[in-house]
Length: 376
Image (cartoon, rainbow, N blue to C red):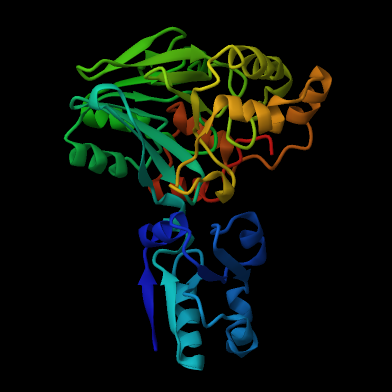
């Protein structure tokens, strides 16, 4: 009998390995409905902490005996208390999430996505609790990191492990749902920071323009990263083609949806650009290119290896956002009845432009919650 802490990293392994797990989430119902831990073999129920202060007897019959049971809350304290009550009530073993959903939001898991030309490697960094995806291209001791989040220690540890020097930190667009770590990484390692110029109108810092047709060479094996202008989510959105095999789409195209054009208040202005990118620019590309987006919305988008990826031709066959033939219908689909906008998205945009600098605790609170960059 007893309770034990489970770290966010350990939880991520269980979710990505599709291990059976039962979760009792003791946050308030509105927080639970907005965002929770999800996975293929994860069962989750919600019972707010304040309803359990007098005891846990009323939920004991809902707790399985054949699975690991994890109790989660916002910051740890309430889940530890409830886990202890459950252990005392039935003599079982219970886990609680160390650091609560805050740590779940911030955990980053690097997953190898592919081997590239002449010994190069491509990694996808899965921020599983937030739905953010970043990438590292490594070749011959050099690296480029694309769409890094603000939690830059994860990338620094990775570079140290791989004994790679950071050459480029790249943002495919000005992000609105999370704070970029691109500038911080570039300053930390003396690398170049690249941002599309059309998205940089209000920035307060220096950057290298990420331009259509620009080629970034990583390592002596010359794994080319080719920039391709692909507006629509933002006016500057730029995709990257890596090693002629992989298409990093930023927030333009996802595995299960397409990007929304409204996070800068420009939906009506940018919807035409979005359609042009998806229905013309991308349609002219090789269908064998593997799409690697900057976000995912549902755990079902992760494959059995814990990666989010799909061939472009496959997405044209099954992604609803790529199959709306009528232009007026497409316009309605991406401008009306959209999901709620990301938490603090305007402040996040200002932060990414260098116009404001919130405290670390405030940054954490700004990013709490799910990814909301997709149309649906």
